[in-house]
Picture 1 (spheres, rainbow, N blue to C red):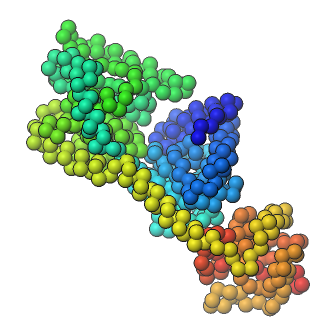
Picture 2 (tube, rainbow, N blue to C red; picture 1 turned 180 degrees about the vertical axis):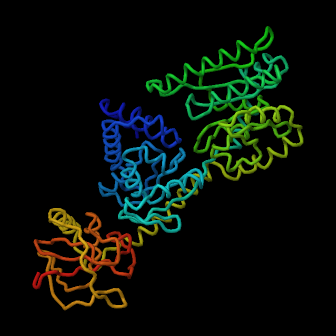
Length: 517
């Protein structure tokens, strides 16, 4: 499905909140966060528009949402009545709490994300950072990697994304004879080649890389050339325009200082290439250089490994801040922020003997084959499918529950009623956690729901949850009015089997506060 986004909101949504707030924050560049309420309003509008557009697929078994552009989408789908499992996968990192707090609506974002049944992350570090961002002010609890909120139970799990390694290896074999690829070695005058392939972005550490190569060329002239492919993006954002000019200046300075008549140290291309051509270029290069300051996974690292000739593989120099570093243990890991670290690794890579290169490459290639993009997708869908089976088990109507129209009416009336939160003196309670009170009776008009102090039905608990009226501690906490009569809602120490109306399995007693109420 292709959806036309309204022009009056696109800039605020994409260039504004998504890429001038979320992108820098998620990559821990808090100083580059540029927030405006107008941009956030546009982000909310687009998520709402997308949710309404997806209603035409409401008969599907499940929904799978991708990336930071749609953090609010799950919550909007729930508000529109979508009950199927909804999964979400974040391709970027998730930052530490201190950085996340630089995003003004961070609590609203996190709360909305908890409408997803399953949230997938690239690394365990990202998952732990997300859980650490859930503070007591959001009003949720965490338990064994699950977050329990009024949305229900959200599972947080790691799913490192893969590639089709075998297809990429085939591309490399076939494209090595393409004119652009085959002509590249002739221009190197017998020198070794390193390759960097990135979107032109401040998170990729391209400037650090160029500085380190320049230092290497000072110490070891003409030891290796660099082919840097940097495809421009987001040119309407000031930070990206400034970066493009800055990198172009660094390249010009390095070439001016270190080139000679027969050799140019760096080739800098602001172009995009097909996967087939890239695979051939990867195989031609003796060293792959991946130096992000922060990255969710970085598939370039995996593509470089997959494209290598098993009889003469190259060496991968990889930032420890890329998610791929958690899997590609045969790479030379570096800290791009540490001066000299990239240069040190380059010197080792240039002189590494064949046997060591093969010993490093083989287990990495084996892992890429075992953890392919197909397996990644299947693993996520299977996890979401488990949620669907649980949901189906809960979709049986509660015995004696009102119709959906009556449920809506009850929710509307509760919303219209005046409610207040106050701590009443703690009454005596039995060992079971139930209150010991005189028997009084109450009636919710129009629903044939008569009771004294007793367990509230899941229908009522669902309505209370929808309006944030269920107490959060085992003590009298929430006083509310129903049809003008005062009740106390008490969360007991017991739990009940979760249902769609009561996904947390809350056990609540409604206590009439007035005789005959």
